[in-house]
Image 1 (tube, rainbow, N blue to C red):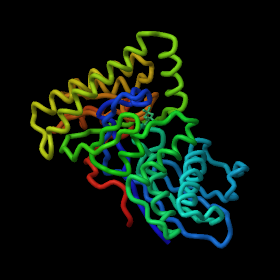
Image 2: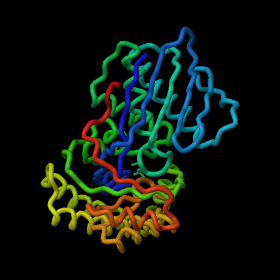
Image 3: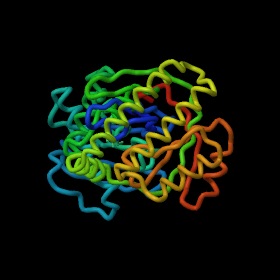
Image 4: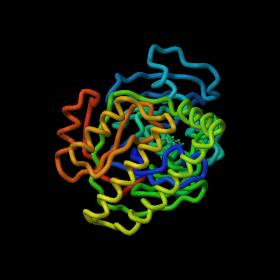
Length: 334
Ligand code: MEV
């Protein structure tokens, strides 16, 4: 039996634009997905999922992944459990050259699904790490990240960047532009996360931005403008090192506000996300923006005081609010 965990993330800057080669800066946060795998005697996969927000379920299906499992559970949750775990197990089998090994897989996650906090990336990264080790195949972090990217890429029909999976594997703040991925460090930033209890469909949202970008020059310009914002932000984060000064936090917040406005122009925000963003700004946050694909889910704000947390607690659109510590450690064995 092998257990591995990997963190979720928030995007300081650059979601969606990163799909077109612009840089993005996601930061890993201390909310982890933990995956335990055990080899079976046959070639089947048994996936058991426990989500803190939705009651758990168990599915058993054959390793070929052909037939959809017949269980009564929300489609999104099922897809997360089967599609991503399937693809990750496939990567581990491929790495170990063990195509016919079956597994019992237990997923436990403190990261809400589809909410912009990188739940699927964390599950995929932790599954690849645990399953490859169970097959006596030690992968280094770069290889886990690459294989996790391939898993997401396959499940999301080619509409995935390396940002989520690289960040979850490495931990800390990272910078991703195309296949150029590196760590920026572990700046101490006062992240506050607001969650509307909903979720967005990443594939649909990414496809929507692509359609907009194909049809309107302004959308292509907006994607490029997000890249400009990220380039300014990444320098600040790189220079911030361990302790970010008030000036740095204030300028980062300003850039996050610009980034949110540009994402809104691309049509990926929502009323509840905007309400939470404005509640945070009015409470005195240095800045706030949606995080991840959008459509619903989470916003991230910068505020060292309690004011944003209090304001979000009182915002009807906000279902949950928490302070998110940066996770300096990425994937790890438990
Ligand atoms: C989703 O967490 C982030 C997006 O940029 C898609 C991706 O980078 O794969 C919207």
